[in-house]
Amino acid sequence: MKAFLRYTFITIKNNVISFLFLNLGLTLLMVGIFGFMNADENKPKSEANSSIIKITDEDKSLLSQRLVAVLSSDNLKELIKINEKEKADFTIIIPKGYQTSAETNKDLHIDIVGSKNSSSFKSEIIASVVKNIANSIITNYTINQTVEDVLKSNTDDGSELKLKQARLEAELGKPLADFKFESIENNLSSYAFFSITFIIFIFFTFIMAPIHQSYKKENLGMEIRLNSMPLKPEKLFTASVLSISVQVFIIITAYFLIFRIAHISFTQNPILLLLYAISFSFLCGSVANFLVLFSNKEFIYGITMIVFMVFGVLSNVFDASLTEKYKILSLLFKDFNITNILSRPLMDIALQNSFLGMAKNFFILSGFALAIYLAGICIAKYKKDKI
Image 1 (cartoon, rainbow, N blue to C red):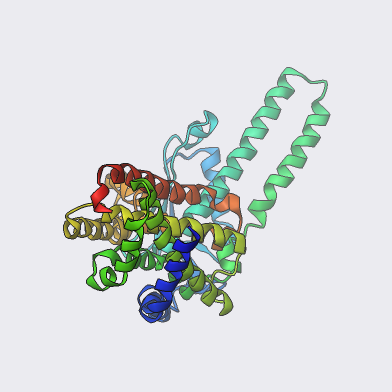
Image 2 (cartoon, helix red, strand yellow):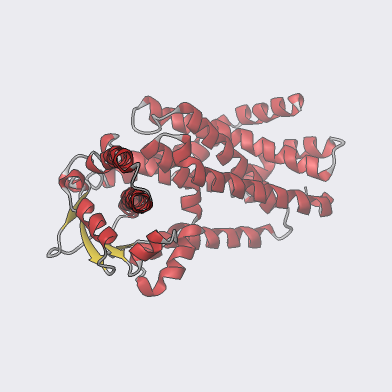
């Protein structure tokens, strides 16, 4: 394995210019162009970052009214502006049965419907804000109800419970009164935003590389080396995955460092960024070698590009413009959006800078990578001559 890794680095060194330009330079160039073109769109701590919101309260309950009151408060004016007269960027719909669902511990989705030209980035932020505030209000309400029930059944410890209730309310009230979303304080600029979302292009430069003739010539030595090893098919597949994963890890680390040194993006906890880089590299290596296993490569790569366009690019359009009538279709596109699978863990790191904050989306990314890898192992066992 040591000799194999040394050969991988020699291959990179012999093609360092094309390796860096194709896999890193083009993505950096696109981030620069799109970041410059959209520099006025993302201006935290300014009116440019404030979105006009319309709230539709279909439930008209105590909990829904509390949520509306908090969203309309001055504490969130840097992020959202409630205005029923102007054309809204987003409409927040609190569905009927909202309080009943909260009382019975059922999950009822609060819909965020964007206008035709709304920003998917701002939609993610507003959805997170609404979810956090709603959870705090529901928790506070549940505690109040529990305390009241206990007081009715046992009046002896009423004074002590009331004191505890007051303390809990004070603690739960803090995040509502002092709520500041980190994207505002951390100044997530347009360059930072595109540096996160455009990581999809690094992914596709690596998984599409094996279909190009130039790559096949450069990789011929590696292929001969692998086939000369007395290894089982699954071991050869793993070695191939490791080869590309190492290359991706070098590129993604350099990508992070460039933006970090320039103080543009990726200035958060380096351990979290390292975890993401490892998972991202493993996914790229697994997908690239998984596609190589198929005999009709041109057809497979064509299907891959269609999937990328539908679930990677068009899904962002659908997610912002679909009406309530197509909610299920919109949710499907959102959940299986490859762009979101890759970028959401990084967005979580940028906005929350904690492992717990990124855990859900990080495990989705890692689980997806592991599933592709295991599928590749299974196919490799039956296609020994295709590796």
